[in-house]
Length: 290
Image (spheres, helix red, strand yellow):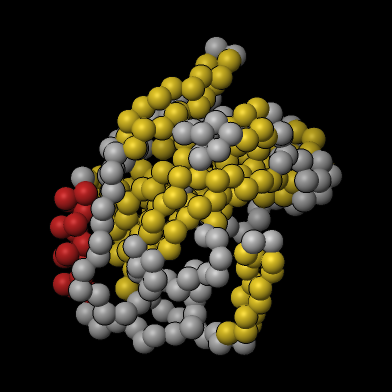
């Protein structure tokens, strides 16, 4: 037994629930959901704050997985927030906020793209169909160029993908010596890693440095499409003690997955094939809560 804990209108709630081992079938088929700021917020380097986003509605039987590569010059999304009591995986979810780690001083404006998440379809009970309705979105891409900050408005069409079942690892190796201080996120240069075209990046968890953990990777170049080859030469590092990152030290590992990119029509075809193959589903349970 364990307590699930959530906050609603400033009050903290706890509810005792039954837990047990829970299995599910993952489709390796997903879509990208854009996390778009819905308010103007001043951020300061080192801040960990909640930012309102344009509501993202997630269908039942989906799970959210982070998509690495910082997408806003002022910081990175640590997590997404559904207000109120947590929902089951089998239920619809609505995301209204994100937890944001600022790495630069500045302003987040309404309409700015601040992150992207992978949304995967999973099987936890018998499914007959999966709703999949996404619309094109207009966002501000915010990046550095020539020493200044550029805010460029673009239209992004909805796309999805089918992920390969196998992956490769890339080791993040510091390419400089850096003094770090407890609780102060910093940018660490890393030996340049190549991200092939049609590849998505996930963090591989478990801290791999004595003084902290890497949070994300990025490059100063404008954002590129997943269909293009990309490079990363910097990492966001969050120290848990005062110390030093030495040149040549490992600060983390990322997973690289190959994908096939497709329109929503193609994604629906992939999902229909997966549903036909999924077979019997798992029994209902109180766990996990989303």
